[in-house]
Image: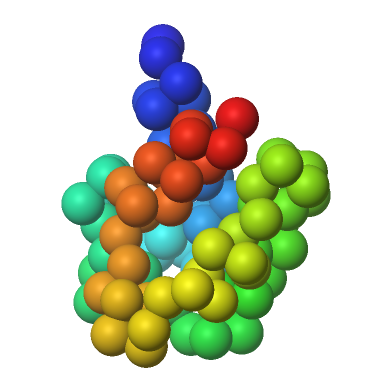
Length: 91
């Protein structure tokens, strides 16, 4: 398993934990999955995910700082793949 696949697996697990709904366990989460349209993550869930990512990957992955550089459209259309790519670059 390469870094990207490992991070994707971790991020998908964290997303399922944050959502906490039964349907989330059955939804395939891949690099092209969008947080807004596909997963319909609410802002509070997104904050919880950011906290979990920070806890998992530590200070080297400044997810909140990275997000703060994006405009609203970019955040709304953010994909799991963009988050995975960011984490891989930081590691």
